[in-house]
Image (cartoon, rainbow, N blue to C red):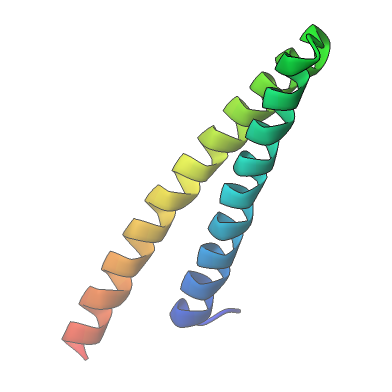
Length: 76
C-alpha cells in the first residue's frame, strides 16, 4: 500500500500527464479545424471533455488527500 506522500506524488504525476494530453488534443483539434475534418474535431471535443472531467475529479481528490495528510501530520 502506498504511503500518503507517495499517493500525492503519483496523483500529481497523473494530473500532469492529463494536462499534457489536453494540450495535445487541443492542438490536434486546431489542425483538424484548419483542414475542415469534422469527424476528428468531434472526436477531439469528446476526448477533451472526458479527460477534462477526469482531470477535475483527480484535482479534487488531490486537494482532499493533501488536506487529510496535512491534518494527519498536525495530529502526530
